[in-house]
Image (tube, rainbow, N blue to C red; front, side, top):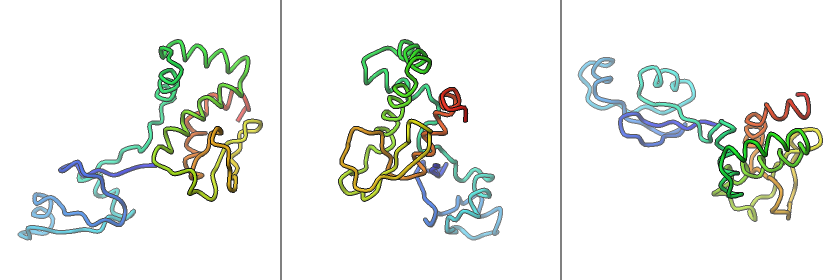
Length: 168
């Protein structure tokens, strides 16, 4: 999950937006024209990144330490103590540690999502590590994600722990 930012202005752009190319690049490519607008598509993104017109940024952090730090704030621990606790829980009670981290990721990934308006949510089965969908879930306490991609990203971030538990 990526977002694109114009390097000149710092403004976020999405696929399908029209962007105005910088004057220096327009002059180098097209001669004397002063302003050229271009439709941002998946095909032109590599070229625009190569010319440093846009830069790609991850929408969510992919470092597990970020989410351990969030869990530490939630439980009012310091980050090192939380890392130690997660390490101990992975060995003694692995499903609890995975559920804690999944819930922290769920909170972070779905900050601006209205749970009541969703017809389907995605969750991770703690017993085999697979993603499944839930229709009209009424349980707010589970670690839920509004899209399957967000659930897959959570599993990708938790991969070192998942390998210890499930061997995959």
